[in-house]
Length: 123
Image 1 (cartoon, rainbow, N blue to C red):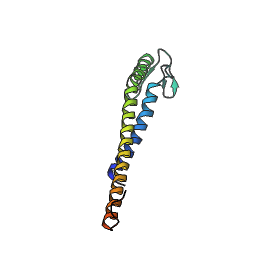
Image 2 (image 1 turned 135 degrees about the horizontal axis):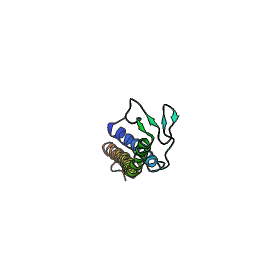
Image 3 (image 1 turned 180 degrees about the horizontal axis):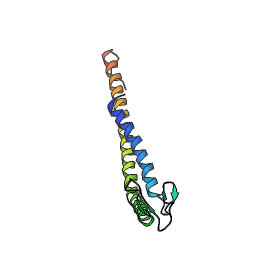
Image 4 (image 1 turned 90 degrees about the horizontal axis):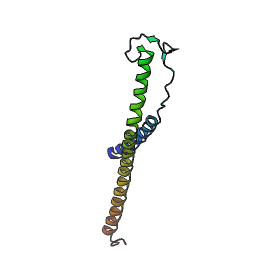
C-alpha cells in the first residue's frame, strides 16, 4: 500500500470518527445524571472527598461542573462535526484523485505499448 493511499484511508476513518464524536457532543444530555461518590448517589448538601479533584466537592459544585461540561460539549460539538466532515471529504477526494491518476497512467502505458509494437496510435 502506498503512503498516499494509506493517508487517504486514515483521513476518511478519522473524519467519520470525528463526525460521530461531534454528533454525540451535540446531543449531550442537558439533564444531569445521578452524581455519585464512591458509587453512592449524592443529594444536595452532601460532600465527597476523593484524591481526584474532579470527583471531590459538594453536590452543588459537582452538579455545576457537570452542567458546564455539558454546555462545553454542546458548544464545540458542531465544530468537531464539521471538521470531521471536511476530513472525510478530503480523504475521499484524495482517494478518488489517486484512482483517476492511476487510470490515466494505465491508459498512457497501453497507448505507448501499442505505439512501440507497431500498431500505431490507439483510438
